[in-house]
Image (cartoon, rainbow over all chains, first blue to last red; front, side, top):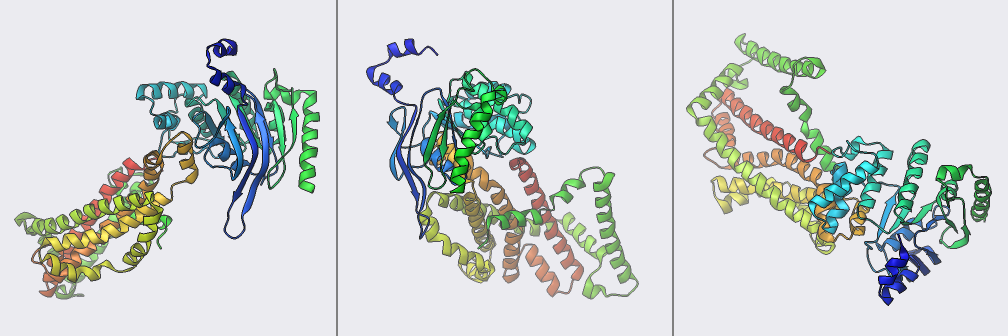
Length: 274
Length: 277
């Protein structure tokens, strides 16, 4: 992507949009009124993610991961503070933002290709375009021949591949990942991690990965944010260089990997202990 | 309150779809052996009965006789009287079933759109569901007459309540995360309804249809017991009162065939609409 040429054609307003961080959270707070005792899920959450970055948030369970995801994707609104995508406050579901969860959320009554096409259908893409795009993506994730299969016949890894194809079909610029691979067995997980990172980097997608797997965060991210337990807050932030020109597998072999892992582990541990 | 699961499970239980699917297939192999045994048991039972009557152990007058029953059914099929009675019952029941199921399903699904109205209607649904609908049959006969109209209305009423609750529970069982997915793609409430809610409710809707076959048949036949001049219920009632037990059994056989045919048709429909299950 040649930003300079694009930028020259843009209006001043659009240039300002490009200058704004891709994702920005300002003092975000979310309270759920759960009956008699309200639950404070996240508090004073502030961070930015720049365009094209691969950023991970790691934290213990209960640090408001799914809340965060819903807030950024616009499925839920913060109780206080602001969530901005490219400088605009998020007020509803964002077409630029896609997400992948641990649950693949495949619709069981739809075949593989129909699942991949569902987002395009909702967006009103013409039938021919839907098919063509879906078939290309199914081929890309290595599932050609399975397009007419129902999800019940697929393995966990295959189902997540379908979910990935479905997510990419609507060409998101930003992708929120909530431990999408954590339900898979280790071997499948490593393979898919490799593939996922390659595909996302090729497409220049900005990624925010929410995980509790330190090794995964270290091997794929440009930056790691460490989140504290309930209520979720960012307590530390680290820029990593392991992933600059490496695949996740190579990153795991890098001597710096162990150091980064240990540093993050110490930080997380102090939170669990306290 | 009936839960979503109850419907689906009840449907599966009532299904017996394995048996009906197997009949058309080969009679060898484990499934074929089951069917062979089923037919053999039925044959043995009928033969034993016939033998017991012929030997004078039991009285035809009280228990009927299979050969007489088959003769009655055969005769009725040839002279058309059985077709006529079956037609009257089938017409009332299927019409009532379809109208009740369609109206009930539409209302049940429509209530998904409005939490307010679904809460308003909930106690009505629960009370209607708990009350045996058949107690209204005498009133319906008063209002709609002795003819087929009152029987149709009984079947409508019975199917309507079950279909309403089934469709509503089905719609409510739709996965909120799947709905979030559609919303995240920019889908509006219609998109949620069409792409998640209705397909999620489909197994429930088909399960209620299956339950309603039996229930509407009970309704129509009870109506015919109460007052009628034709129909299989009338035939059962009138022949029993005339102590023609073999004829009564023939009419019962016809009712069983009607019910089984409909369940078979629903199994086909289920295989078509919910093959993904």
